[in-house]
Length: 184
Length: 184
DNA sequence: GTCTATATACCGATAGAC
DNA sequence: GTCTATCGGTATATAGAC
Image 1 (cartoon, protein in one colour):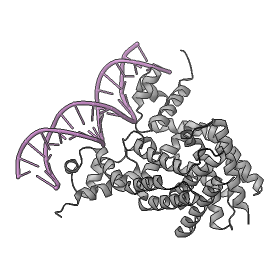
Image 2 (spheres, protein in one colour):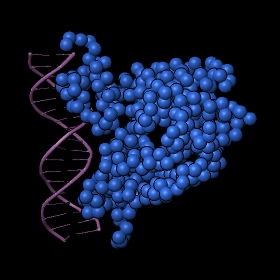
Image 3 (tube, each protein chain N blue to C red):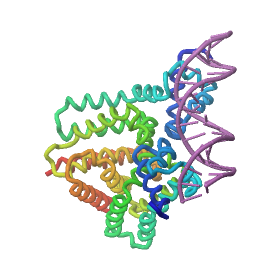
Image 4 (tube, rainbow over the protein chains, first blue to last red):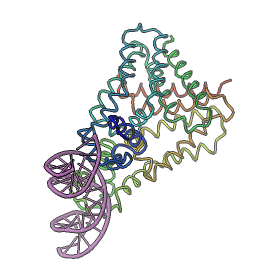
């Protein structure tokens, strides 16, 4: 059990517990016990509890940053928007525990100092798939496309069916929505 | 300032703070201060902190119960499903702070004893608008219709535009989705 | 890097006077 | 119905030995 990977192990366990039980209901004692160390050891690696989740966020949110950056350089075509949705779904799946945590603890996340930056990214993404002069209904369609991806990742587990098939269907619905949002 | 409405005032302030800051981060001391009473006074009206939110939920979730009951008695037609969505949007709007709280504090709500019953109701509603034998894509469309209503109520405030117009557009998108979900 | 021990603060909840 | 006072518990965080 010798290592330099304790920091990483703390993040892994913390995210698991945060996503499962919520941020405030997960104590540092609980995280420490799960790792067979003491609370004090945690404080060697992270200055505060909030630092733990900030570290996790910075590590795992990079794909979203890259997606936002990439989206900003593309022409605002239907194909681009569809590719944004495809990549966003992939990003959601790659970091499901983090996004589940953000999703189910919004009230907590909101003033966690990562909250604002996350919302900024989300609104950026929304802007890239919007058509500024389109009627309200089409704007709603575009927003709903993103929400369909969220629903598919975080709620569809309550619906029976093969997970792969569900994900594919979710993507299709999102792509349809963005196509309709583009139209006349 | 004597009267019998203290219980109601506690619920009002509590829900406001719960929705704003989250359940765990809102202390009874804070609720009491806002009402210019002491914590002990709260305990005269409610046995525990959880009882406060349970009471709020029972009072405000009745429209949802009625909707679920009504939906169960209707034929499973497109018209019924569209009416369910219309009524659901209305219910969301009528109790926005409660649903915002449930939405943004899922991790907390999940084991709050109201959590399960709420999820049951939600899944019931979902069942009523689903077509059991339809392809996965149509099931996703139906779920997305509900989520579009949620998105419209809790996220669209970040999108500029007249609130009434937004709500109308959201409903239209949801109705379109359920219609497509019914189709071939 | 991890430990023991502890400081400090706040929480939910209760007892009992008025 | 509301108060003062307090209990018991747990939380985050720190000091200092090893």
